[in-house]
Length: 249
Length: 315
Image (cartoon, rainbow over all chains, first blue to last red; front, side):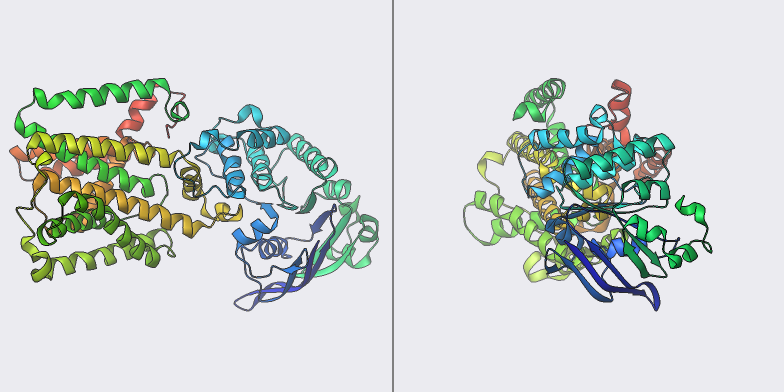
């Protein structure tokens, strides 16, 4: 479904991503891991169109989407959440998700129909599925950090994506919130059959949900394979603090 | 559809206000009738600015240029074309919208502050041309004695005309703010990057917003001519833009009717404090300082909070 081919991104000579390769098949849950500064977020920004690659190709459903603007990438069926909370903070929780739904339905230039009456059922269904329905009318900026991160995923679902990219979905969450998010991701993948690509520092979480893991270092790909392959790979062990086993315990 | 837009409380208070205003010319002295007619034009102007400022997050620093352009378009049409005057009323707002499109195409790529700076320079250019082009615009003298349709020739006629047109335009803008377009526009205000990531063409949306705001500013320009019967380059000068920006902040720029209230306050201040001192802007300066420190949500924001602490916002 998604095939990133030796993608390169340089910022004034600094190679943030240097020849990374990634394959995601339909229905997969793929985790990208790697030390800080390995280029995970940059890779996601390249796929979702926030950044333009210096070289390389990104194939999505047999179409090269490298270099497309982010709103066009989104319309192809890829949507994402962010590492740092990135929501519409003056709008209510309901309105946050509704923006994405209205955008997908191409209603953005509808000038006179009350938005209150539009896309209500679908928006509420999404809020229900991520567990925020009881907070629908709350101004999103006043939510707790954990709820805001979940709302991130809700907004991304509003685009009804085929591929959902989550950039550190549990960063800054309490253990309870992490468990809730993990359950949510499992449900999205299991019940809805959504293809998920995510990056995460919590190895316990990565190994409990991903069926494919890609390891990055210095902007390149060390290996992509099943959790077992990755766990037994010597190079990966070295990349993580000279082979600290507890990382993969 | 109406029910979705207004809750009963807002609908009743707006109707009462409107009914009151419809009766006012019967017992108000002529000067106040004139003053209110002017207020309607400026309230419409401030609200049109807030469409892009408060609801779109675009720092439209030189909004008055669209107002002046609409006023001049009507004035030139009325004095030079010889065609029925009502056509001028219909055409002028579209002239402003066209100017909004042209300036918007140049500025919309720029980010917040640069967007505002570019607007000031382009707007000042339009002002300078108007100011110097004696043969066409009358230069710094402006155009006086603009013929008006008989219906609006009297001060009461102008009052009713301005009230009805301004109220209609406010209703239309209220609908726009609460439409999917408006919802997305507010999303762009809060977070343009994220909005683009959910598939919105942000620049196209912003450009549309700018054209709409310019259109309504143009309508306000024609209302000004209806009251004053003349135009002059000051209508496009950047100080007026600053003044309407202050109106938005004063009234409350996240609340739909905030800028209209701000316009009423500033015009009253100018009129009544202006009788006692020509330094009335000094009072304005002090008001502004107090505002920034104590009322970041504006006057109307304060009232709404007092009235209903749970209601953080009313679209």
